[in-house]
Amino acid sequence: MSEQHFDVLIIGAGVSGIGMACHLQRECPGKSFAILERRQSIGGTWDLFRYPGIRSDSDMFTFGYNFRPWTGGKVLADGASIKNYVSETAKEHNVEPHIRYGLAVKTADWSSAEKCWKLTAANEATGKSETYTASFLIGCTGYYNYDQGYKPDFPGEADFKGQVVHPQHWPEGLDYTGKKIVVIGSGATAVTLVPTLAEKAGHVTMLQRSPTYLMPLPSTDKVTIGIQKVLPAKAAYRLTRARNITVSRFLYQRSRKNPKLMRRLFLGIIKHQVGDQTDMRHFTPSYNPWDQRLCVVKDGDLFRALKTGKASMATDHIERFTETGIRLKSGEHLDADIIVPATGLDIQMLGGIKPKVDGQEVALKNKVVYKNVMVEGVPNAGMIFGYTNISWTLKADIASEYLCRLINHMDQRRLRVAVARDNENSLGEDTVMGALDSGYVKRAADRLPRQGTHGPWRASQDYQADVKVLRFDPIEDGYIEFDGKKTHASERNLRGFLQPLRSALFGA
Image 1 (cartoon, rainbow, N blue to C red):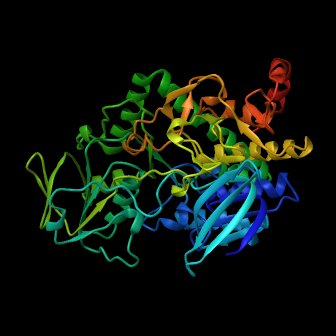
Image 2: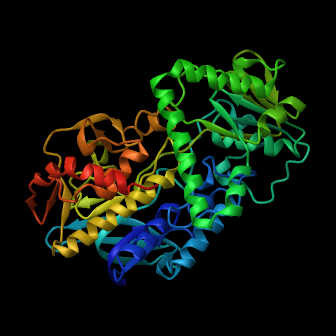
Image 3: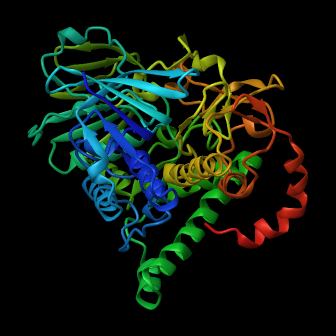
């Protein structure tokens, strides 16, 4: 059994892990680090998912890293392009040599006596166990189970004579030409799959229990292409990012403040897209905008597929699977050769690792998060957890910046241990995923850490506010205990004085 020590260990080589490593290279030069990645390639989600049409559901000018421009005018990029972007970023910042592939981290234990983390990882190729130690641990594993997606137990599923294919495990080379396909779901995966499959399939039916808010978005941005012709790449990128962040924040905030108005707006846009011949009950959700994520329709492709008759919608509940398809509660039968349950994710934190502090397992459901970056009571550890209402990477970038600031502050003060302490009993009901009402969030409520009711324990979904907190607020703010000593909160009194300066320095 080998053992190796690093200043920082990062778990996961996806968008968040590669971003964190790049920030370390840029902001903490000289720090030794390694990335432990279970898969054999960079990319995380974008290496795992291979279903037809896989693409981003956030615009790439805000999904891209803040330190490396996304070039070109493509707004919604395909999975291969995103994976390539992440890989090129890793090469450009000399991160690739630090990745250890094929390692499934099994345990993570903090020792207060030794002031370090000890991780055991299984080498899935050799079956051998490897041990790593680190002064600081950062989880960049996302929030879902890579081994399996969520799929309900459908009555009569064993009777179905065709194929059942989950998007998370799409078979390579699956030939669906001319086939009758039913896609179960109404989220981003279903909205992507249906028009793509319809290009070759005989017919595709999108079967949903309830509709989702949809928003058509062009795949290329002509304004950005024009800006790129007259401005340097970085300047054009920053300008486009700032514009898109402003638009996204406006739509989200207006949806929370005036849901009735925004509901009329969204439904009006959809009605214009689908025309008068389509039953709007398939597109009229029972909830308010942004109670669940908004689904983007690339170039209106789903609406085109419906208009041409290559695809259709069914809003109903499943009674059971049959030999030849699905019978609905209404009595209608949907014929199918292939059924695709695009029924969501199975959420898990830290890739299923259950961390321990001095031998005691950390029950995440009983913990609050500090600035949505650290878990209360867990020393020298961070987690990168992106936004749910705008691009994930916007939060991942500034969370990485904050952790680099924290590490540098500890070095400058010769401090060895940092742990966030909730001395105000701020534990709230909402999880780190905020007020999202999606099924996959509800199912995982007992596995997710909580956010607090106030202060830095409350997880913000406001990028502009988070930039100020994570980039500029003092590290020693009275909430973090260093080397077992509670710090004074006197620095918090400087915030009013520093606010104008921070505002002047603010940048996306």
